[in-house]
Length: 484
Image (tube, rainbow, N blue to C red; front, side, top):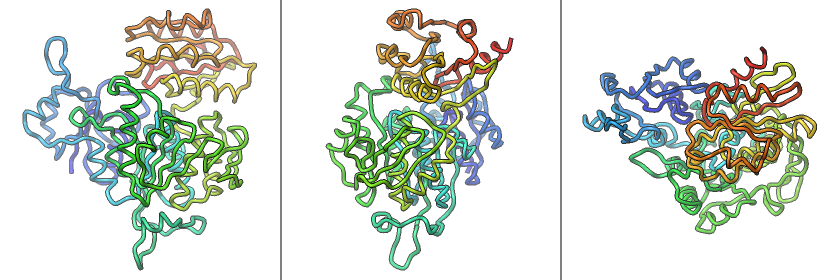
């Protein structure tokens, strides 16, 4: 079929576009203000990108329009529709669907889905799990909200029903789920997906992940976020419970034992096998520093992870991925060995360059908890002597609303200096960061921000740029400024 995707450069919709193209469909799409890495991936795939949402795109006459959740029925100040193409689709009675619904019907149906949910770490953990299954010979399909360096693409369909390699042990739950009398396992290929709790589309306000019907589900963590669509933490917990309700009795729920919010989610009802990680009494625990640690399963040492990643958050991500992989028969030892060659995801502590001994990083962190854990990971990596300059923009809808602003100063404790881009904010960032004193500066423009950082930076510094958007190309502009 020919599908035309509205909002194609979002990480989810861009991955969906790649899957549809690989499956042989004709794919076109439109978006506004595109930025890498997704725009680069789409162009490399030869997918036509149209700037804007003009109604003239109806002339493409696709079989179906796939609607991203960036699209709405919003109006501009002059009363004109913000998305005229969507209005034209509705007026014409043209066929349309959401991205998650299209994915469920055309890609996920009949597969063993491994879904990774959580407020933080979804992209990294999904990438870890896909890499573990890949190294175990299971040829998984995947859709990740970023570009895993190991794979070079954010999504792929994966292999068919392949024979299990010798090092993969069939577990009873998996065997019951995937085999029938006289059949060779597995009956279905595997698909690993980042399971987002954000809403599906303007016409479907359920969380995306309720469409995925996983057999293996990771609940990595859960705290308040997405203040633009959720009233409170309880509302998000309700959505996570809806996800748990879709996991079959032969499935597995892997849950972070450190999170009270997830305990409440499971107490609301769970009908599947549960495996926990993280806490001292969990099924899977870690012993050692995040860069080199032993994995214990119910107190018994079963594997050792030695890799290039740092941070306690990544240690927990690894435990979650190992526990999920064991559900499809991959031993912790094989999983740990795979993680030894894991290279993370673009925009996750990605080094963008070093000039005069000053290193510039790019990271997707935007929630205060993510900012804190990212800074902690870098501090553990470089030690206490080197300086960290945190450069960030509160760009997410939650941060723009100011819901988490009071947590910002504490989240920046590991930074020696902090620089906040205030463009688009309705609240006073200078006042919010006042408890940091002279350690914090604010700037209303990217040019002013770059000038501030350039004036403060000195050889040996680590400049960590954090945003869930393109950040005005601040990384390249900083590197260019440092060269002068």
